[in-house]
Image (cartoon, rainbow, N blue to C red; front, side, top):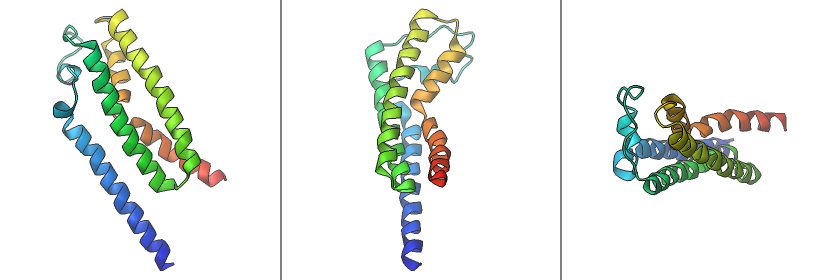
Length: 147
């Protein structure tokens, strides 16, 4: 019993540290990543024209941020569930979701120009925030309960 309690304390501590790292990625986003849309979406973006951007730099900035969030999220999932098969499955989902979202982001950016700013906002939000972690934790918990 004591061992289980200590293990849970360790898990809570490690998960808390990883969540703090996710917060640090968010806190230092302007210094770490190229993203001209950070300032753009803080203002009245519905009426403003899209900012000038370098597509390649934007792709790599979004990729790096998604990668950091994904690695931290997978580590959180691992420490919560201790299931390697689940982590492999989640990794596969993250790769598929990144490809779909990055293609959607650049399609909206280039084909809709300034018409679908709200759609661009939400697609970008899924790329830069660890929202999938919020979806995966209850889903995997439910799956664990079923098994």
